[in-house]
Image (cartoon, rainbow, N blue to C red; front, side):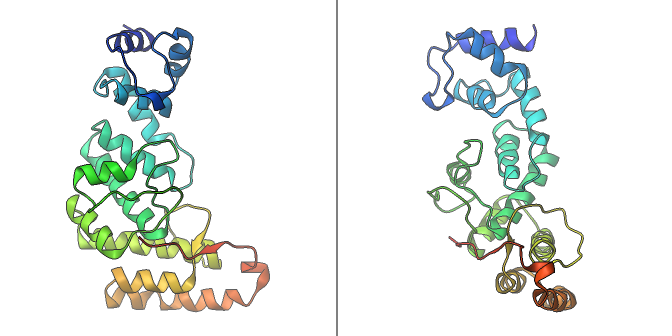
Length: 238
């Protein structure tokens, strides 16, 4: 049975599909089109009909976990895919670290770009104390990030590494400081916010190691050609 045939079988086993899926069970053309290539609408369809363990759903989840734009916010979608479709433990842990970085950097989303209800999902898992509403990007408070990290058994060292990755990216993106970082987004944290993240999450020795980078950032601020067009934000922490 190929992927399209399996999709037909799965859809017609159920009489009702969640309204936000926007696919009718009788519309064979749409179902065929949406199942041709991995896409988020099809993944939401599989979740709506309770077929996330099917071979087609697993194939598609595996593909979409990796196939995403470079912006770090799309890693929120990868987190949802890994946990909702029960991908392997390595990817679950990897994307949980991405989520913690996003929560520090102001790229947490109650509802992801692709329509996954991240906040409700984390609340149902017991990883946050209550679901956060609203749209757009947010930063999470220290206590919520630590609660999330504890739930997913993320170590202090891993939390520190997440914070340093966000800090180095912000210095690179917002202040033209040459650093190595795997984080990628559009707007960096402001310098005061960078120092705040360091004080919240890093031990003294790791904070001290960043001081030369702060000095370069402040020096670069004096040169509009280097930093005049760069975007910096102070995210709302909830």
